[in-house]
Length: 325
Picture 1 (cartoon, rainbow, N blue to C red):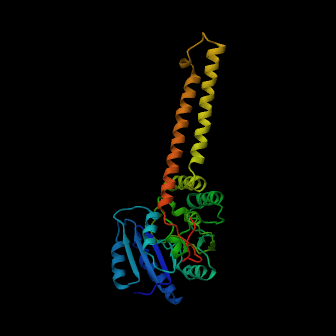
Picture 2: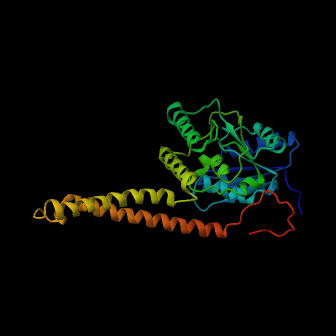
Picture 3: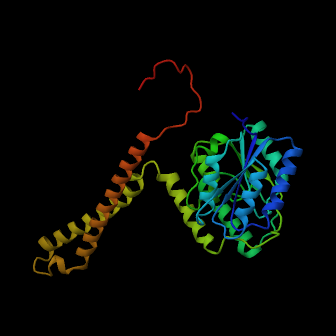
């Protein structure tokens, strides 16, 4: 059995044939100088250039390099998740492949996790070399919103440079476009020792950014999803039931009003079905019932999921004794 490496470095990439050789040489030099055993996991997210050919060539020369290739472009979150599944190091670091993240930070990130007892360290690109209008300003807005929603006091949620304990990345699942909010997923997974480190950021040397303007919309929608899951993920009836109750009360209120008005106030007036209040009442009662049903279905799904879920236990005491249920 091979010895467990001290550090796993996961790098997702898309069409970075120019950057990868320089990045690989830089990482190897830094980690060998720091006397850290490591593995390098390169995840090809559907590249159409010669990136994968280079990965195969270098993996044949250096057994510390492992490659994963997607059939098509699935996104950074899926690439990170695939890399996390293959990790074996005591500490796991992630970084981008565009040379904007400096490998010089890796030894310090490793030491912060292994010696300072953090669950996760997130990089903070305090000085950025990106477009002020299209990257810096939106990033500041999203980071402010993420702090408000999650309660995690980080300056840069989406920095590519991060470090984790191995059990953290084996617990969380990065999906959709949630790579922007991995610290929130870590906290939701029960890991609260989250720190931050100012890291060096560099201007892009080759090519262009792979993220278009649609990342603003996706980031905003993902943030709403995280807020909803954080508030109501365990008890969906609290959300859907509240809305359903309000709509049902409105519907019944209009119905009672129409009934009293027709019977006691204006018996010879218009038919109830000819009055707009009738359709307001009917719509509210139908929608209210549907919201209630959505809440019930959500509760059933959550309870079944919890019943089947294997919980990760931090520690046990007297584990040979009987457990009271």
